[in-house]
Image 1 (cartoon, one colour):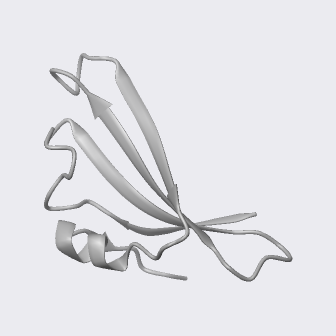
Image 2 (image 1 turned 120 degrees about the vertical axis):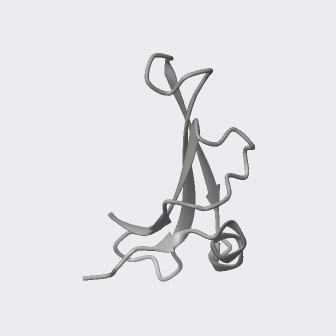
Length: 80
């Protein structure tokens, strides 16, 4: 399986916890499968990102997240 970073460093945090929540968007591809799976990962820390435990969540979807990436103002990753 290959994991490709699509975007991160979003201007707007959908979780409403900025600056303690950070979203990243990834595409997952595996051999023999033509359709990718998309994942959004979120790291969260309350109330202070420097001293609080960090929680993570992954959200999976078959739909391309390009529109959400645009709405959230994320920086697109440069592809090799």
